[in-house]
Image (cartoon, rainbow over all chains, first blue to last red; front, side):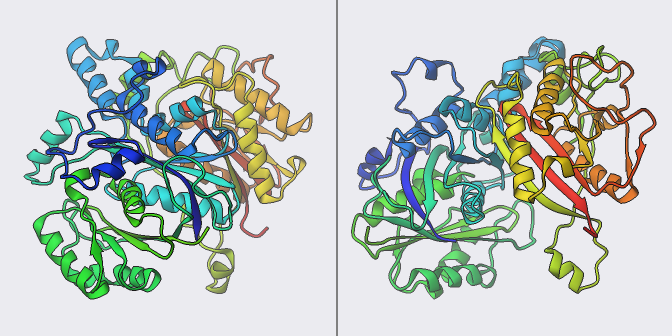
Length: 331
Length: 215
């Protein structure tokens, strides 16, 4: 299934919005992959919304670029959901007792709650789906969005992925002895059928016509807390992406630990001997929504010239992996 | 799949959605839900492939539909507009007319607002020709993330057995809810098509049309 990207939006560490991210790509990554500004600070409603929902809404609004969203389908990908709300709720239970826990924090802690809040904020009355797939949550949301288009269940799909970092999450990583640095942020892409016109007329600067040519996911049964560290296991999906992308694409490698990165390097060298590497791991951190953030980042790198292709490689603890291929084509 | 734990219990308690007694879906005395836990899995395969390998087909997912209320974080649209949109989308996807539905497995949580909104949605979709309706949450409790799959399984079992289960806990049907209830003790009848409804926080609505495997 191919789809046209009609708009993009992003709230990333060091960059609120596509234009800001485009400028930031030429600079060193932030010291820590944390979002310091969302870009909605002047909006009165935003002050009452949880931080995760604010990031989502800002990215979604940028991708929509003022379009009416009533008939748009929404697919939201997240690894951890509203962690701030989850921690608030648990702290309330612990401090004040179970009978006095916060009802607001509870419903905001439920994984699909941010999507519901976004559908209310944007007036979305079409499908509203929430998916979670560890560090492939962004890629999985994109795949579901493409499937909705392919099955003609929606003419336009807003795919949003968002995750946030809280101290409890960092403590959790440390508790398992992980040296990975969790990241946060939100990204949104508005998809239409591949023949849809008007590409690039909404949201972030998409260029002539950005097309998603492939989104494929694969799983290899492995350890629950380890990334796939075998080049042989990584190669088939990367080889598939290479056949679609052609020679000399930009490639965005998945972040991961040393063993994974070593295996990934070998598999990438085989599949893409002449690739240009766009390593955004330091900028976005180890983020369940990172696949969609890196898609936006790579689209910005591709620039406006037609023919350029980009490959986003994703990997999750437990052995799953994903590839996305995007390309600028003549409008 | 979902498990019952203190977090979930305390959350629904804080939202004042729990009934102190076992829940009574669609009952005049209903005052909240009962939490449950469980898991259900359905193995899906394209029909032609299943038939080619001689599999025993238990049922068919004939269509599905989803919608958003775009109304409130925890309360349904008071007229059930989003719920009705999901049901209509599922029926259209399946190519099934409302009059062809033999049984509805309702979301039926037994909260005052949800049951009323769902009843209005059912009345709007079926327009005076409502099939028998029941909520199995009176028996299972609200199993939250598992509820949609569990109720899909129960709907398939109902179709296979030709038996629509009654709503456990329903003693005095709320006269203000325009619902045709499955009679006490259940209903034995040929059932070919079932509609299963599930609604979630934030106004997320989904509906499934399920048919017998031999249909």
